Length: 135
Image (cartoon, rainbow, N blue to C red; front, side):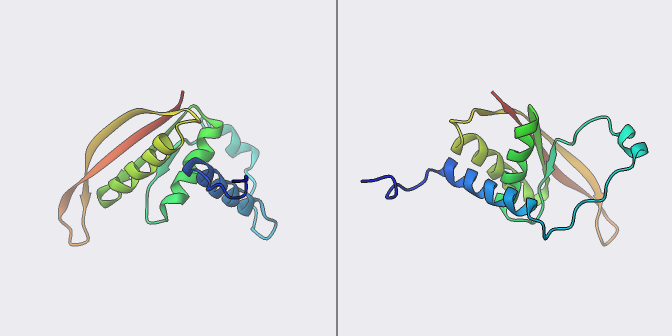
């Protein structure tokens, strides 16, 4: 069997997806972000290292987390309600399927947030924060 007959590993597939997304973001047809003024750059004291889980496909969050991990030691994945399972899936894809890279679970925090629903009632919504660190 030659090298072209090999099926890529999960880690290789994730890195290929990450590379495609990264290349797409660098393409010239996308509009650039507005430049920050000097005043606003002085107010920024830390780099954002939190990924909020929403309704996008799971690989979007895996890619975003890997991008942040390339620049930072720890990244936090946050989710509430039904999205908690998706947050766990993102963290497990990075930790279990990319074990050769050396990411590990830094910590898990659970909480409950009090939110007002559309009908005006107060409701408790479960929340989770998962820290992923470089080993």
